[in-house]
Image (cartoon, rainbow, N blue to C red; front, side, top):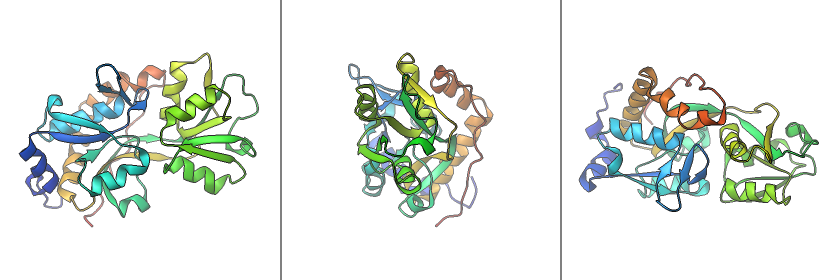
Length: 261
């Protein structure tokens, strides 16, 4: 590890060791990324596999992880108030969020896309959204981008993308926008009804959110991610989850080991 930090310097890690388990924030409604089985309560998907490989590197086996569903709008406060130890759930790294939380990674590069019904021919990309009802998650980066860059779109928001997709299927909205990784998962579940259109119109580096001042934890996770990318564990996790959408594994983005704040 660099910068002179050691894992025992992490207050978050010490608290987790004392309680005997990690508490990890995640999504529960994103196919192939972060999904919770309502019957068993088990979480699965690419982000969940990333969370598990990080936990293993921190000394916690999978049966010592408690996953907790956290909505997009509540991620920062959940890390700030110690409700969770770290967060893995399509969490885009940006400068505004870095003022509130720390980020390890990125571990994946997504891009904003559009999901529409199979019978929709009028939407090919974001330039076609004028006057269209477009749904995204409250507080998310994709919501803010449409609001700023395509103000003539009729933007609606909900706490989760699954509600947006339900409204798309019932003709209450015309498109759902978020990261293409999330949209591909939904399209793969009902390919006869939904499709992803156009090219990605952003770069969304997914990071692991940690408490802002816990540089020791952040740098430890950076090291774990780099090792798992090198040894093939990262690709294996992708192939078993997001890869089921038919999109082959991309090259992981370079990790940003930014200086301690």
